[in-house]
Each structure stands twice: as C-alpha cells, then as structure tokens.
Amino acid sequence: MQINSGSSYKDIIIAGAGPAGCTAALKLRKSGLSILLIDKNTFPRDKVCGDAIGGRAVRVLSMLDPSFPEMLEKLEGVNKSAGWKLYAPNGKSVELHFTYPGHVARRQDFDNFLFRLVKDSGKIEIREGFQLKDVHAGGNFINITNDLGESYHSKLLIACDGAQSVVAKRLAKFRVDLSHYSGAVRAYYTNIKGIYDKEMIEIHLLKKYLPGYFWLFPLDENSANVGFGMLSSDIARRKINLKAAMEEIIYNSPALKDRFKESIRTSDISGFGLPLGGRDMEISGERFMLCGDAASLIDPLNGEGIGNAMLSGLLAGEQALKCFESDNFSVKMMKHYDDSVKHNLTAELKKKLTLQRLFNRSWLINGMVNAGLRFPLIKHFIGRHL
Ligand SMILES: Cc1cc2nc3c(=O)[nH]c(=O)nc-3n(C[C@H](O)[C@H](O)[C@H](O)COP(=O)(O)OP(=O)(O)OC[C@H]3O[C@@H](n4cnc5c(N)ncnc54)[C@H](O)[C@@H]3O)c2cc1C
Image (cartoon, rainbow, N blue to C red; front, side, top):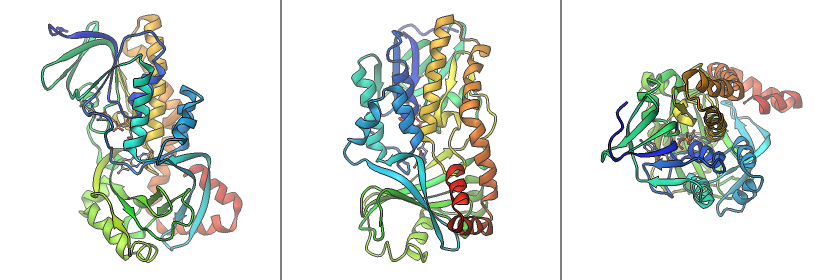
C-alpha cells in the first residue's frame, strides 16, 4: 500500500470517540504506544439515545479504574437507575430490579465524561473535527484519510465510528439488513406526571407496535428521555412514521395520555439507527477491529448498546496489546478478538434475538407479566433474561 507523503505514523488509530472508542483508548492509555483518537465531532457533542447507561457500562468503567464509577455518579444530571417497570400490552405492569444498577444520563454529558477521562490521561493524542472518509489496509500499515486529504497510517486501527461506520462498510463489507436493524426516535420532556420513582425506568409494550417499544427514562422527578423504536423491517413494511407514532402513543394511549397532558417537550424529536447484534459476523480483519455499533453489537431485545460498545472497546484494547507484544496483526491473530466478543457478548445477544422474535406476540407478554406478578421466580427470570 502506498503511504501518502505527509501522512503521520501512530502505532494505533482509534476512529470514533463514543463509548467504544473512549473505552479502547482508556484501556490502552498506559501501554506506552503512540495512540491517536479521532472524531468527526467536537466534544461535548450529543448522540441520539435513550440515555440509559446500563450496569454493564458501569462494570466496564470499574475495570478501567475502580474510581471511575464514583466519578460518574457525582456528575451533575446523572440519575441512578435501580430497575425497570415493564408495561404489558394489557396495561398490567411488573417491576424488576437490576442485578447491576445503572444510570440515566444525557449522552452529551456521559460521552463528554468519558472523553475527558481520555483527555485528562494525557497519554492519548486527540483530533476532533477529523471526519474519516476513506480507509485502506495492506502491507505493513492501515491508512485513513479525511475529506481534506489529511492522512494517518498505523499498524492497527480500532474502528468505533458508530452505526454508519465507514470502516465496517469499506473493510468488512457490512451492508444494512433491515431485519437486524432498528429505527428509534427520542425527545426530552418535562412536567410529566406519575414518575413515582425516578430510579425506575419504564418500558411500555404496545400491541400495535410489537416487538417495538416505547420508553420513558427519568432524568429527575418530572423530566425524562422519552422514545419509541421498532425493527426497521417492520417500519418499512408497515410504512410507520416513528415521530408521528411516538406522539400518537404519548397523547392517546390510556397509560400515558394523562401523564403527558401538561408536559412540555424541550427538544426536537430526533431519530437514528440501531445495528442489532445476535448474528455471527466477522468483526475484524488484517490490522483492524470493529467495536460497538460499528460491529453491530446492540442488544436486539432492549436496544441497549452503550455497555456492549464499552465492553467491545475493552476487549479490542486487550487484543491490541497482544498484537503489539507479538508484532502480529494478521487475520488469524485478529480473530482472537472475534472469539472474545463471541464468548463475552454474542452468545447472550443470540438469546435476546430469539426472545425478540417471540415478542411480537402480545398474549405471550401479557401472560409473562401476569405470571411475573404472581410468582416471584418468574419475575426473577424475566428480570435476568430481558
Ligand atoms: C434512539 C436510540 C436510543 C438508544 N437508547 C439506548 C439506551 O438507552 N441505552 C443504551 O445502552 N443504548 C442505547 N442506544 C444505542 C447506543 O446509542 C449505541 O449502541 C452506542 O452509542 C454505541 O456506542 P459507539 O461508541 O459504538 O458509537 P457512537 O456512540 O455512535 O460513537 C461513534 C463516534 O464516532 C464518531 N464518528 C462517526 N463517524 C465518524 C467518521 N466518519 N469519522 C470520525 N468520527 C466518526 C461519532 O462522532 C461518535 O462520536 C440507542 C440508540 C438509539 C439510536
């Protein structure tokens, strides 16, 4: 591969400074390697999301440094989430407590928290406003360029550039499969009634939209991140307008309309795609690894992707260290990363995919919630597996 004149060398390039990219950077901050973290945006930046930072994300943070979870808790605007309330299509609900509590925090704040940890480490070179346009692998290096023609080359690329990953398209030849993809919209509302416990996030399953769901994730006693998502294949087949559907749910559904009567929407309704996990996909190749949304690792049942993105970033960081120890970046060597993602994540995501396929049956969810209300063991089972 020809290296552009003027291209700078780094041992590792991490593309994308979201949860996956920042975690990979934090994992590698003490490696002594020269590492460049690039992002097309300038931080703090927003990301369309439900803002539920699950227990897995908190656990990955503590693996990076035991003091990080406490630092996150102290961040302004971070609301603890201890469990969730699941509303079945028949209107009944069951409350479940998380084994590992998490938080609800605006992504602008959470992602900036991670970004600051990377920046403050002083060990990672950062380039904001660098939009990766093209990537080439071959020979001894991998090369990235932006729209201005600036370029860097490295021995290894960790691609954390999100749902529309350039690297996944170019190097792993990923194409969107609508049956493994969701679309979702969200907005912030205040003056919502009936947030009786701000530590409980709410999931509403509505017969008309199964296996999609409506969420209400409290930020405080009367404000929340509110959203609605469905499988993209269903959106296309049924020609659903997600924004209109979300407003229809808020203002017409019996469980919600009174609670939103005097609410005020404080943001636009914004949407984005969710590449879902649960399939066997090759997420590495010679000199590169894909992490987070770039690797399609979102939970296909509940739409959580932050913790999975962070875990994959951590695993990619571990694999990167092994590659540099042995100076081996071959396809075979990188496959160890695929194996550890499979072991730590894909097996679980496959189970969730099976459940997602079952969840278009409202009678099943009604029955499950009814049973959960009567039998603690079933409630425990639901809590563990959803
Ligand atoms: C509506 C919605 C609601 C969701 N709700 C939740 C939730 O409540 N909880 C949860 O856990 N998950 C949720 N998710 C999923 C979650 O948002 C993602 O799984 C998570 O953000 C993945 O992290 P990531 O680091 O892989 O990617 P991202 O967070 O998308 O970060 C990617 C980074 O790469 C940068 N980038 C992208 N392209 C380029 C480029 N070409 N060049 C340079 N930089 C680039 C971006 O600026 C960004 O900073 C939701 C998703 C959506 C769409």
